[in-house]
Image 1 (tube, rainbow, N blue to C red):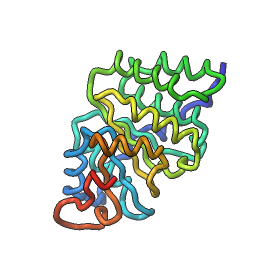
Image 2: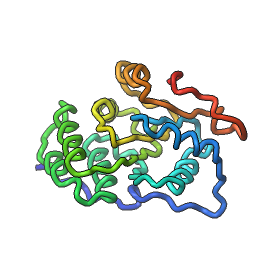
Image 3: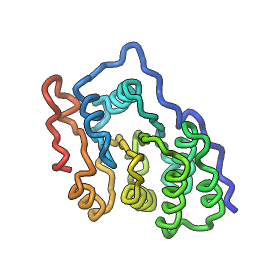
Image 4: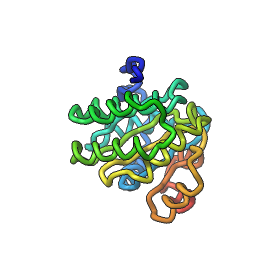
Length: 210
């Protein structure tokens, strides 16, 4: 059995809404309008307000939002998954026991489908509500092929009530097949640099472009 390090709570707590937060209602509306997709990507270099936009959205939605601030230690897929389970469990205490037991008992995660099946089945069995998981600063782990493959596999098998929002300085390196399937099925949308700096009008980044 693998004993994981303790989860650092500040990584799975949603940041508070600061008084000086810049509100961008058109971009928040874009997220509301496309939250039914499996995946929303918010991608730009540092300084474009990706995290503040997501904080604004979290405090504007009635959906439960599970937040995970990514750190470099999560390049290890076991650490990444442990924090993902903890982030969901924080909002849904009935979830996580089975997935955590399988994760701790697995000597290797070489076949991502085996663990993803456990995770998805437990979500299906224990969480009836629609909910969102935010992965903030995903670029910190994007160099880990193991994490990318695990995330890609999970996205392909997400239950209908589970929606990802990924914030990153780069477009995540998911498999080409995975992105192609999401695009073909209209299950992905996103915001880029031009959208984040645009002060008025509708979002310029069409879902079909991703």
